[in-house]
Length: 284
Length: 337
Image 1: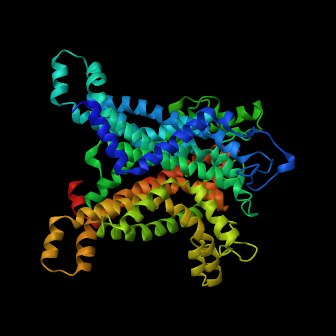
Image 2: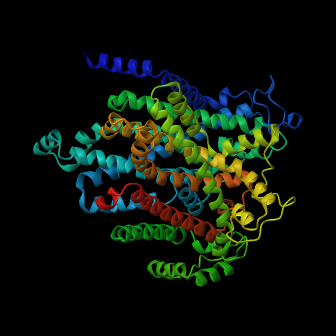
Image 3: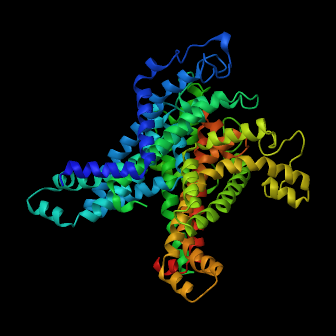
């Protein structure tokens, strides 16, 4: 059977077995469209205040209602997708690349490099991770960039340890030995022969990790770090809406919160689906 | 005993790492740490004063030794916002956070373990699927959002939960006399059952919101390890020997399934301690998390670093406790180590 046909069958299997993956892909597309064209899609300007329509409940005019300043919540939720996904994706990509590099070095060379990198990762893991992220943001300064950096640091050990393990197992394998015999130096062996083989499994890690990165970034902005008002962002919108719960204005926090849940749920499902697709042995 | 000592010594590198990181976070930063510590309202003179007072004009290794020396005396510096020593502030608020975390853990374990066991005894049944689905849905909810939803539903709509005003509605009740600092415990010690009930009522919603997030990993690992234990040879032998179902399930399978469960507790504690901050914020809980949030937003530097350090030390100790628990559950661990 040709490679394309096998891949096609595998994809068909993954989707057929697990319809939820298809749902996740659909949600992901919606989220990405919002992130890419949010400002064009939003019915109103997300920053525009309207003193005649403060705190109006959901209606035909404002599908998700308006907040205390009369801003349209639907528009704010849609536009926020770019910042929320942007923060999480950049953090995950950064920790993916750095974690892969550190893990590969530790796993391939062993010895001192392994011990130092391992100790470094252990130290990160010795903290409750959200607390460490708070400390980092507090120390480096209160900005979106530092939220991304903090999220990157607390995710690093997962990628690094995973890559280390996978590289270490492959180091003595026949094809790697052959590549070394062929006169390749360490770097080409790693980059051309080992890393391509561990990438699929790393991608699954990344997808499963994405939801957590979103939760983490939104949690930091919920407590008032990084993103500042009036910037639309899901975490900060939930926290702004929180003060109106006691008086029953539920729409101010439910819609941005639901957007968060949807995004995290989507990435968790996607990770599960991707794992089924790439690693059929782990199907449970 | 030898194992115990070995494990105790094993925490030293972690603690050392934690101390180095908190030191670096506070002393070796881009910008001027003295300006951070002096606070936003400081002028050049007060910044210079803080610099000499904290020894920030010394080289880093000297500063580090000084930092460790201060720690040995329990000195974490002074908070700008409260004006008190950070250690005093944190110790005052710690029982509130510990109490909340404890109830959240009890809630999560009490629900997740039976769920996991039940799902494992009937794999691929409706119960199993429901259990897995509800667990993955729970994992997608941000803790703070769950907290707010519960307040909206149970306080605003149904009006069965008390107002989320923190540990106790001080207008209606007075706090029990301080013994342990945990209100429910103190109220019991004082024999004041009305206050005990009031404290417990305040605890229910925050503990559930906090515990829900810990539910997923515990239930998932319980299910997986129970499936493995139930499919093993010793369970088959026990079944073939005609032992009663309950005995097979509890004495044979569950006892063996417990070790992986206790191993996942470390990660659960990381979640719980981190999410504590968010839940305290939602419920106006006067714990160290809420204290840290106020401190971060006010650039109260010493307070934040003290909080991070305390949480990390707490986490290292909890992990130690989990490991020791592991040796009680499974004596083999002692020999492997």
